[in-house]
Length: 251
Image (cartoon, rainbow, N blue to C red; front, side, top):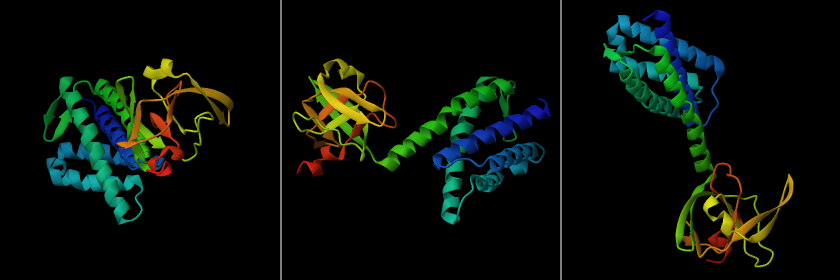
């Protein structure tokens, strides 16, 4: 294997690890710090080949703690979180890389993983790992915004949706006076026939709703209509207005 390809593989791996770690922390990466971390990581891997002691458990742990500085921590608590996110990212991507390397004819020697197809392996890792930061950010965003479980029963069918409390929503049915929950549920699109006027910054439109046999929020009964969105919602499968919450209905 050419030394340039070895360094490139390890630099790419460190870039993926740092990218996922920043996503887990909910931060944006700092370009020059990420680049410096990738270069140092590649040089560390090269050093571990010629000095096996550096590739031991203690050496890897020490380098990981140093590499966490590339995540721009602020204070000791934030640094501890950065280290935790870095190792979680390294375990995830490193395990994936190890599996792909062995699957493409690679081997392990003195704590270093060698592969006969470095470019193909690196591309596979990059492709698979590129989905992880976005997924991590979505999960963190849902937790920060208070994701809840919405249960819907309609004509004997049961549906469970990841929902968010939308404090900016005041959607309601002018005929019944009930609040309206908006959900992306294509299975019930043809059943929604009650027109619900909607006013947004983009203008006025109409959503169509239905009256479920039962609708509950984390097990608590709600009294609301369910409007079906024609397209997927951002960050959730359903949006619940505050007026639909049990505390607002007197429960």
